[in-house]
Amino acid sequence: MVELHTGLFANLWAMLNSNLSSSNHSIKELELPRHELSERLEKAILDIKVAAVHAQKIGLEVAAGHGLNYHNVGEMMNIEEIVELNIGQSIIAPKCFYWLRECC
Image (cartoon, rainbow, N blue to C red; front, side, top):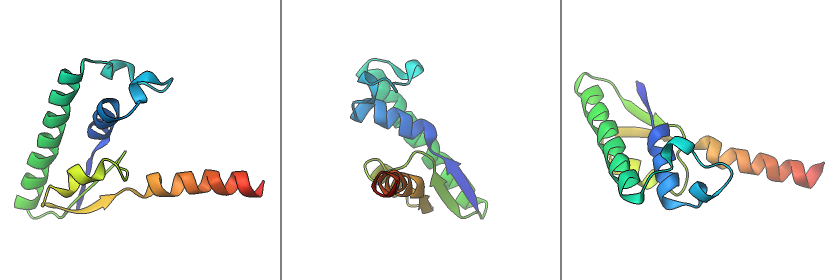
């Protein structure tokens, strides 16, 4: 099995589809015009697809993860060669902070 890193995809998606670019957490190197972000996002998706196809062709099962969440995971679900998506941190981390606020 191989896991493809989706961090660039996730960062591009967030800069294009959320308020990240106008927050203190903006990714400076991705502060680009929307059309350029969109082009880079499409290329990132294509790169992941090509890697997934190649990995499957040589006999590997394909997983993907890093920066995936409820909002952007749909893009990765469209790549049929990917058999596992790892979005656990985006689910667990907010629950931990909620629990810490409630109990401590």
